[in-house]
Image (cartoon, rainbow, N blue to C red):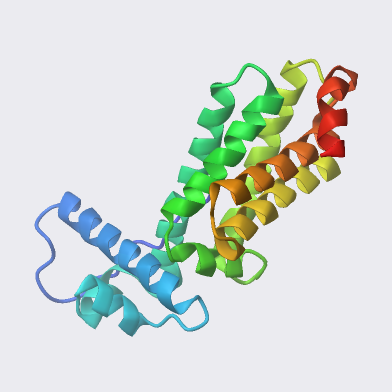
Length: 222
């Protein structure tokens, strides 16, 4: 997956810097994770440097020594977050011999990823469709990468190449159903079973062929 995670190099400032490059990277990572935690509590629009300083237990000069503005540490954290999502889905496809079932495992991986975010999941979803948000940029990059991953799996199974429209329908449909489960449901096993059934129907309608009809018909009646 290609994701642009470039960040402006640290600024020069007075004072004694950490002794090693590893120390500096560790501090930058600490600030990035503190920014992500503050983002989860405040949301992107309300996020301020003061929130990050409190979370990271650092001074304002220390923050600005490494970052010019809040978007830089947020980009670092968001990049890792979305790389983790892509890796989970990639592993799910590798574990299945058929793309239909691989996609179902990938959907489970998506939901597990969402559960791992805790309170962050709500703030993250709120930024997905805000074009000015750095979160939205990484979401789009993950979607593009997933389109390639799914296309490859579908073609290798002998099914026809899906169109970009079909791929977009499936990916955003899964995204909606997953976050609806994470944010709007009781997260019970019964509710998740209903969510998986809806995803499976969407999956078969998007990528299924004649060979999948015996499986598709009873599902559509359910």
